Image (cartoon, rainbow, N blue to C red):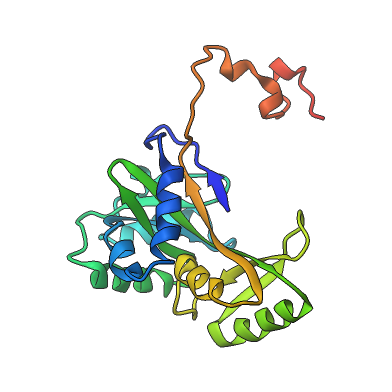
Length: 227
């Protein structure tokens, strides 16, 4: 599953192909080396827990000097994530993984994941996996695996037999690794991570910001009302 990232700071072309490459790597015999080569050592994506206040977030960045300052992050409203550059790149993948574990150990943090890049294209791994089960037995298998691998799941509202999984902090795997494990199970039709990506196409319409129907917020342009 893919989500679109709207940010002026991000490259806007070809990220979909990177997502396909990530999935291909995780289903090939050389999966570990291929995927590892795509991970950025100088940038991460993280999300705070719902109870975290603005002051808590700022203090977190102040205390963690390996992260660039709060004001220099890319912050999104939906999903409520931060894309954060590191003050210095990690030496290797093991160092990055250790940093992610350190970040996740903070009770204010909901998740922290790596960022993937090929050339100028980036993909941002969220903390969700979409799984479609074949039968009722598939849901029972999902329940058993949730206890074994430490993830929670709920029904996906918009389609039958699809469930949204969320790795817990105690889970040894991030969403991409978890999806690769689950995709090998014959009870599941597919298992795909939820990935954030920048727009493949951007508008050149000079009146784009006046297209009120795209975001009905009740501005004067919209007659000061919402529908």
